Image (tube, rainbow, N blue to C red):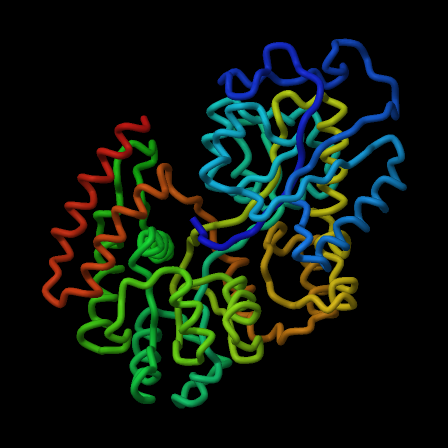
Length: 459
């Protein structure tokens, strides 16, 4: 769960036989026939609704979207894109209700965390018969594409993808006598750097961590994955975080909080709290992705030049986040094929659409943050990074260690019942950070029992 994040795509169409949204069946459309059962004429007119057009409050990105729609429709005059805007693009309280009621766009925007449930509930169309039309598919990271797969079937495609890393204040590193071009690569390095930053004086915090509003459990998961641990068993039925890796996460925090005194006395932080601290120039490090730097710059009075992002220390695995698009089960084959054309045009092609960095620079939008990793080191990925650097308006070298690390980690999805598990682990995180006598073994054992009850109800 990422409390501030992303948004995008499609809705409506002709009903397919036995493919009602929310029925649990999720029938696959025939690749050669329209939803009415007859072969559709080549280049017949088709209209598709797409979710998550940038809102009017974001005029530059909305203008770029509209320009791409116009250019796409010029290339494909038989296709009409019906853009649907909403801010935010997903409201968790209404998202499932819209899915169950069949009210989603033909091509609708999703967070990674909702994909498995949508597939299991038959609330998205199987697009496997059409997927090979996407020319960049062969270059996409298998671990990213797998998010939208169930066995051999594909139910959607990603728009963005990121791994977690270590966000740090380069300015404070310099003040503390640390080299900002050599960020920590181990948790021992993090601990040592945090102590030096905290020693700068009152109000300086070497390392910040969440422990409220489900964000503590979210960061626990990120740190756990980085150490090679798992939140749940392979079958998803029992908790797996009461492990040496889980214990190491809490022991490290307990040491920094109470022995090193490098985390400050104020705790129970939520998302905005660490953003505000980072923007104020008083926080040295925190777990996060590059979009943290953008949020700090845009909303919390920070400056791009002052921050860097490195890989998560010692990590071979990383909590993956992102979003993408899936198709309404009612969408016709023609709508799915048209939607895939738009998806590739707008979201999957280097130097085009969302990756048209030359245009973004001309429009005064920040360019240079490595916010999306769909292709790794394949040709599209190399081209994407080259153009990002070519038109950068922020110092890309501040994020190079994150890029290098991301190319060598395996992405892991959030666990099933993620929000419930995060809420449970908030308790363990807050206890370690607010009580010097907190018993880590007991905290993990109690959390494990509660998590098992949650997972048992969902199995």
